[in-house]
Length: 175
Image 1 (cartoon, rainbow, N blue to C red):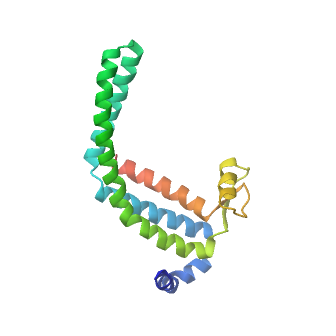
Image 2 (tube, one colour; image 1 turned 120 degrees about the horizontal axis):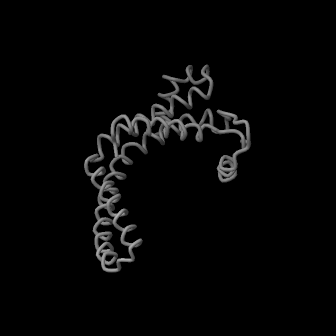
Image 3 (cartoon, rainbow, N blue to C red; image 1 turned 90 degrees about the vertical axis):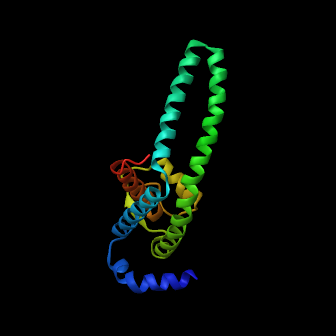
């Protein structure tokens, strides 16, 4: 099934992929997916509910710290009950915030990443001027041949889509 989709994507974009530097392809892919994921979250997630939940959590944490600082056992027991209600609400909101967007965005990621990985799976997209232990750990975990100072296609995609998504969430005032 995916091979048919990959063949269609090859027919439409193979020339662009073969003539464009891998960094630009990975960057454009990250930007596209960052915009796509943010749009999906904007559409499917109740932003007002998320903001309300964040506000409630901040207020609870403030009250909890104050009660601990004052060693107010009665207030702490009361806050434990409030914490149970808050956790229940958080669970409900997070379930809807994760499940619906994931149903739409995960297949898109699988399709596009699977297609592009055929071209760039072990390609160093960016070389950094030092060895970074997290990059090295990631490469060892996936048994990659890339060095500790090289960020591959997946790493560059993650960085670009994260940055684009964070900026868009801020601009759209999303929770």
